[in-house]
Length: 139
Image (cartoon, rainbow, N blue to C red; front, side, top):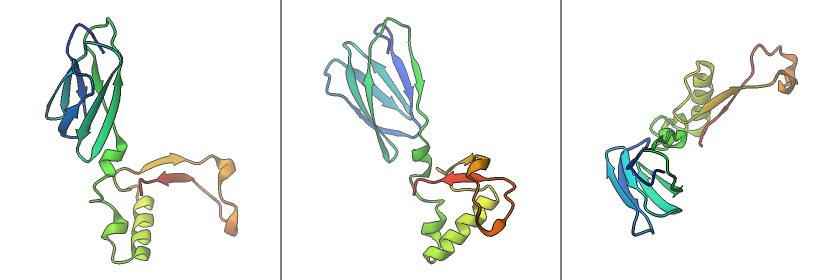
């Protein structure tokens, strides 16, 4: 963080509160942005944004103003609005819906997919694997 100028942190969600144990750290929230002026280093900064809490350790430098963008994929899937398991009538229906959406490449928010190495393809049922993708979700 710059000692000379105001620094800006852009959060993934609306900021509800900011606090620090350092009395000389100035931090103000406006929308998704936190404006920070640091006087001594290191300093802590706690930011509540959406349903998530973020803890930063700020280190001062002689650089000019810093703009930091926080991307948190957990925040996208945190509400559960798009969770087929929660929306289903029972657990089995939820799993079937999740598999259907995975086949259509329409996974719920917060899920991340990555290709599987061909050496790790399943060998059961003697099926030929055309493309292997592993998907992980927050829940």
